[in-house]
Length: 336
Image (cartoon, rainbow, N blue to C red):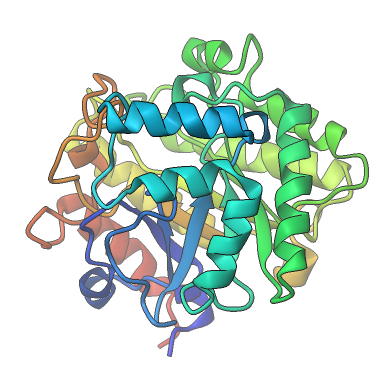
């Protein structure tokens, strides 16, 4: 039986990650599937909560897009994540197909499952150039579909990347992620996501003040939520860690120890969630459980990413230095 504290702790999973084995080494309560329903590992039978990502984008929901995707897939022109099929791709593109998929696989998606709409909506380097209004429009459509299934599914706004550096400003079309987030909320006009997700990577991961930077991003995100009457909305830190080139192990371990403790313990009577003892963050998800054992075009070949720098487990399943720091930061906070 997972404790309330353990239920807050999650990891991002790629194909081949063994979540059951990882949960024996780390106090994990949930994991996020980064393969868009095409995961090649099994959900954990309720022992660890499964949070799938929905890559649906309404602007592509048409027959022509499906035909093009099918032709490109057959021609070998589309990146293929291990375990990901053409049916997975087409289901992700069509709201009707997606709804039928979720209804058909109801054992995999039990009542109350939290789905995340995209990884980083509006973040152009990820191939997502939706405007805030388009993100909200997709949220409305997906939420209506989920509600129509009648099993209490919930929907999270995919993670907003909030560092303040030139890359982020270019990625969001000339504004920082925090402003993009405000624009999404302004476009909601009465619609509410069940959960909001932030990716508070340090603006300069190699800086000695990396932790303070990420901490302030979380606080600022909560301030926006409070100002707009969303204090009771759950906040997830959907990605954190230091998956960037040029970050030494000592820096990665220090960042891990500080950010994990802050996320789990930080409260604020003015901006925290009053239904969760005024905690700033309800759940968090480490960047990656282990380095992928295979090539994923656009991800593993990115010159700016270093999966090993942030991974909690080695490819063989042993705790890394970061993994040990992760566990040691959490252990004192767990009920005895």
